[in-house]
Image 1 (cartoon, rainbow, N blue to C red):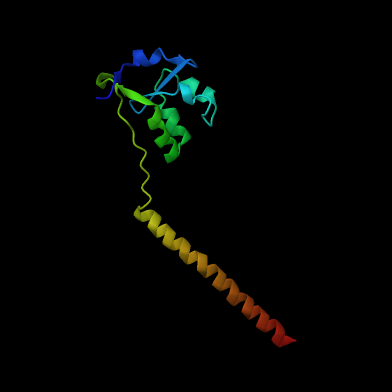
Image 2 (cartoon, rainbow, N blue to C red):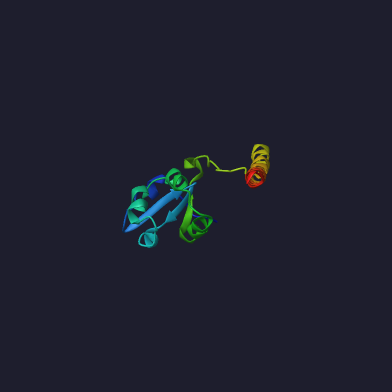
Length: 130
């Protein structure tokens, strides 16, 4: 069973001696990670004792960073205090992107071919007149 905490519990851990952060209803003790955080400890301390979900997503953390988070997870928020988690799903396979990619591949070869033909015509005209 996962340990559950209230926001009141989390708010008590808001300094560099004990740093807890809530991200997507999960509670993380990042105290040991303060010195290792690539963005500096200040970034984590700004969110200490709070819900840092929005700030976390705004930065756009890598999948490696998200995997590393599991090491610091100590529990979850109690059910009554949870917020809906907004998933940032990017659909890379939409029909509009497919049509634009096929258009761009068409443009990627038509321009060089046109320039080649134009250069050939100019070359022939120039050397036939001399």
